[in-house]
Image (cartoon, rainbow, N blue to C red):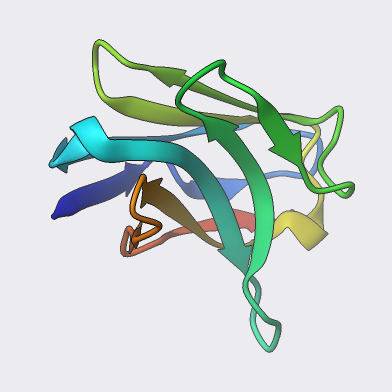
Length: 117
């Protein structure tokens, strides 16, 4: 089992920045990749960004390219999402995600990000 706990969400004005964190614990040795998804009200959950465990290859949704940066600190077992130039359409519940080498996936409980005046 892998436990994922998100932190760092909240309310921010358009153009502002937030950094999300995801602390991983449990059977993390088998994690193959991690990432962030988000779900806005009335919409399906969508990919935001992912990063592989080996090589650190990243992938971003077109809507966040150039504004968001995914990174990880393996020593702290923590995943990050730096979000800059935030827009109202970035408002959503953000979920941390991990997948292991057996293709089993794990999800955090989610954290609210609201971009509004």
